[in-house]
Image 1 (tube, rainbow, N blue to C red):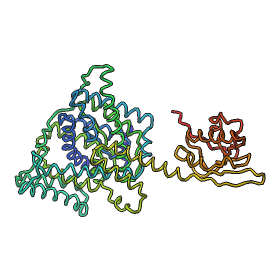
Image 2: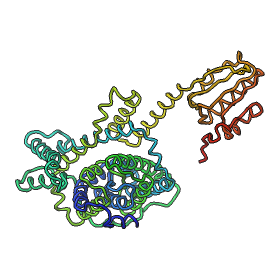
Image 3: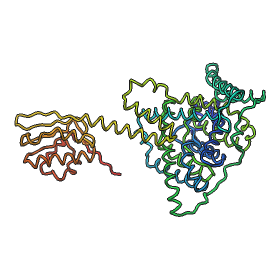
Image 4: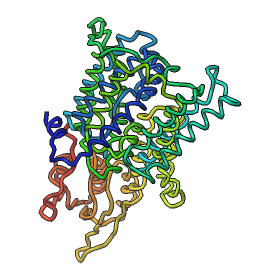
Length: 509
């Protein structure tokens, strides 16, 4: 319970006013999103609200990133919608519990460090795509229930209220920071609508949020292998999507706050939160970049803001539903549009013509996949794969061989650049086996043997020299490599004294 002790440790520099007000603001913004995501998944609005409460509370207390907000998300909703339609809500709850177990396992195995493999262009593309999605999702507020664009007085009303909200959020911090601008904007617009009796869409028009404390409920499903076969694929995807989105959000908040969070601790907290969400009638979720940015932009940096947001959300559901349902959607729409503007990496637009074309390709591809497929995990995976292939291709072209003869007539091939699966063809082309002298030395002082494909290439090159009756020495190879070159061990001259610390990487997993 160290996090709880730290939370109330008065030696910490915590601005309690900022944390509490920011938490209330986040709670207000969480309501329509949680309801909307639950409806996307084909579930009751309360399953989204309960998930937002449980996820937000647990991750705020035990997570690896103070100030980050978790809750029900669209990324999880689009994964479980098919399961909800085919097997019902009980299977969804079980899936969320299993996803939590998978995430906890990933955290305990310290797999959070794998986020380091995500290149910066992928993060740019992810953030930009998410910003566009947040913006586009707000356009629904400018349409009527039939999906047609509003016109006339109704359009001008909501447009005016949205612009007023955005103006307050933009301008108030220039005057005073005594109250979070986003909260002030919501209260001002709420007051104007209530005082003048303006007819505009409210939170209550989405769905009723009235409910009680999240009920404890063990998923009512058969405990069988068949059930596991049904829910495991969904659980694995939910776990993967949740971890990717959470760890990327953690990385982004790290940059904003200029501090460092713990990915592994966050993975464990996300897992515990999802497990509890599944048994407390919630749909599960992960970190929410939009809400996290609202929180950090308000100046919140501690765990208190997330805890307040979760508790206030539950208070709204249990006691304040009648009042919260009257909050104009225009105020929340303006807030989320400002979030999308703040989320977008505008600096990335200035990189066109300056960054390598491969990085631009990755950034644009990730953005497009995020926007059009709404699959954040797939977008990140595609971006990482493209980046890895580009890296492999570039390094494959960098292998060089400087050739020289010594005073004894022995030919030396001094290899430069990494030897791995991508550079094997270029490596083999460096040698003139038929015309080389009877003794050849291949020097790896400026090269590194990276993988098993490279080991096999060395084995083949020694065999080719042996077939024509010539002797080849491989210098500066480690003892690990020598053991793998069993077929040529009688003609290999391994010199490890000049490079005693070099080891071939072997995956022992």
